Image 1 (cartoon, rainbow, N blue to C red):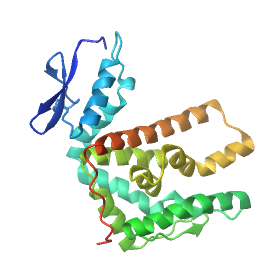
Image 2 (cartoon, one colour):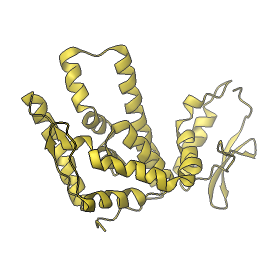
Image 3 (cartoon, helix red, strand yellow):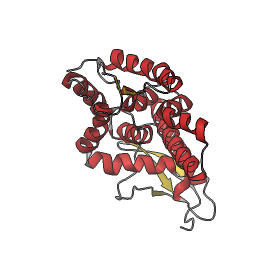
Length: 243
């Protein structure tokens, strides 16, 4: 799409901070005003639009796209999306370990067990751990505690959590990233632990490397998005009660 504007401004509006392109409000794909609660996030999104060249490239507007997802899709399907995210707790990858090879088993325990311990204390949500791939059943109280934690996030925060959970394949890893327990590098390492171990043994092809880079980019975007929201708008922390 050819660039159709010159000036980008952040403007206080009723209900938040909006962006104006040559004085016209920037809107989401659903035509809703792009209103944001954090000036830091609004300015970062404005910088994305200012940084466009002769053509506007959607791939270079990641914060804009994630904010639009929160305002358009998450707001309209909040219950469905919160439930989708919370379901990861029932089969979270950090709960499934191996016996062999021993080195991988040691790495899994060293990396994942501290996250399980953190989640147990943070959300009053103890998780069962098993060896093998056969599914285990987590307690209803634990699943409810994770559901309450997910439901406590607002539309924009939930959009970021959904992105992080999908990229990590783990709600525990995603929550640790969103809550500041892990940085992006550590979250990616935890989520990709098994695959990274296999790559050490057999190598990595170009397609695999591209896919892993995309997953890491998604985690980084979710983390940056939340960090910008928190500059002036700390998240309401999920309750530590299991309900």
